[in-house]
Image (cartoon, rainbow, N blue to C red; front, side, top):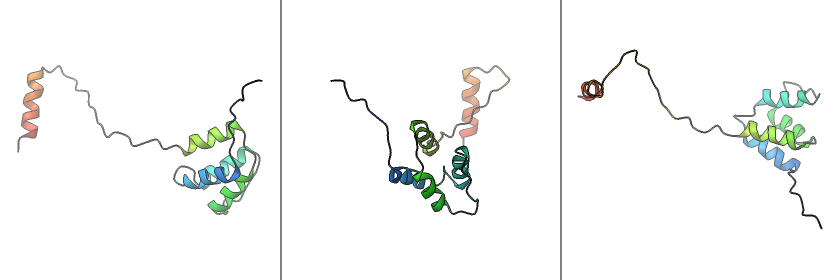
Length: 105
């Protein structure tokens, strides 16, 4: 007997839930573009709920589901870092002196 091969599938309800839960990432414009890629044109006046309902009922293959999941993923919070390259050679002591001046009340 051969081993069962894992298959990736999602029901229309799961696709609907995934699309609805990603409101900020998958807006009406993205939904219209997803349908347009399949040769289906919906009105820009259709509500988001109507678009999600219609798109979730379409057949989706592995590539389509991965695309939807990638669109839906949160990029995560970006670290708030700023870096500046100074056009001068400074010693560690000079940097410490500047930090003391800046941090002094």
